[in-house]
Length: 338
Image 1 (cartoon, helix red, strand yellow):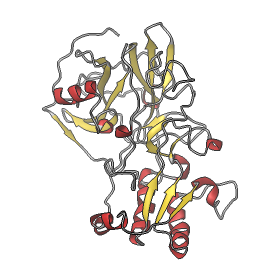
Image 2: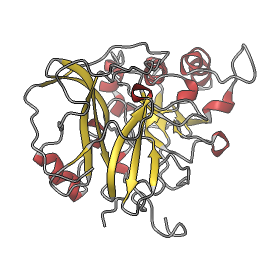
Image 3: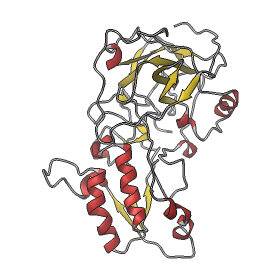
């Protein structure tokens, strides 16, 4: 039975995986894959607001099937994945908007080796558990995938998984780049494109991280550091923090700021330690691009950014990684051991 331990090589990244200091950038059947007619598109959308498309009764008016057989995985990717040595799986798993045969849609890929069947459900199909079934790969990798036409940026979705034992589960995407704001629990189709403006700082970053120089770190729990000036019940956004926290940290003389976990977590009092979305910055405070903006502002003042990454506080939320395909896929079978 396939198992996986989440490793530090799979950590969340917005601008490529970096060292410790820096950013947060059915029937099982054989299928043949054609990737030649596909081109990747970078969908530019609002950085601040994600709006889900309304339910449509005419989703697919093109010549394509509701779910097309398609893969972004090469044989080399699969070999690395099986060996546990693929360090950029976030570029393949999850949801990715693209054009296929002249039609814009979204490619979905999820690892569920012990599932009988996997469907994608969301606003786009009225959360129908029987309408958009993914295809399992022929190579024994346990990957389910497919291209769904006309599903684009801002769509909310989950995976409806029927386990080997017949249990029916609804799970968020382990590789989602954005989630609904808690207490809602769906994943969101999005992108992390950003026109970075910190090239000069990145070139000289090694000087800031050098062991020959002293450094001081200001550790922050984002949600409790300050509240919105409009209401004490509202969090400050990433962009609001850029105007307040950056000058404060600079005036205090710190060389780095360290954020307690910002990866998506449903339970706020956990301080971010009970993570369900390792590849998504918390939507409580804004969009991925908003966080990138905050990081750029720190860099502009020669302040490095450290992001805490915590795999040890494994939560048991039903929509998360816990017993993802009906087995302990991402966790130890014995909760006392991992």
